[in-house]
Image (cartoon, rainbow, N blue to C red):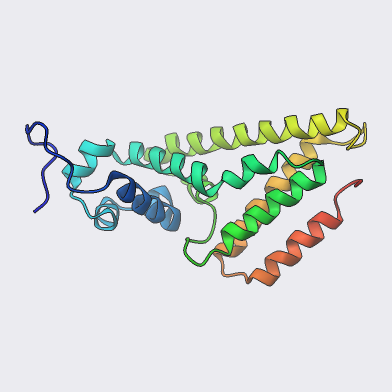
Length: 203
């Protein structure tokens, strides 16, 4: 029988693994988006009651933010690693191949959690939409800085449009996520990836 975490008991351990519960919540949000995920679906997937969810994670918005942290930490780790590639084109290739691997995983939902949740339009979800956009801007800034370094190193031409290249990479990655969510096959996404790299300026 599950413990009610709202009860005034002291020193009793949780009767569920908080990391496993958060991973389960992430999969629900990833599949359905913030607005599409109901509390009933979340608690059933997490194997806990609503009082337990509120006690451990706060409200639905707080749970989503924690799930988004997990998503960025584990599922988007390739984005941080890509910045260490020796060339700008190498950065772009690592980003696109990381996105491809993520979208083609057999054990994860398709599509991008950020894309799915950024299109939320209800009043309740506005704060979530703003949070997703803010995090995306942080990733955008990191990539701009890396490409600016490539320009200083002579790896990109002096007249290279850094904002344009950065926007292009994110547009391709988001487009791949949308296509994967709509059922695109791996070979289709690979063609998008290879075509994108062929269009890359310079080396």
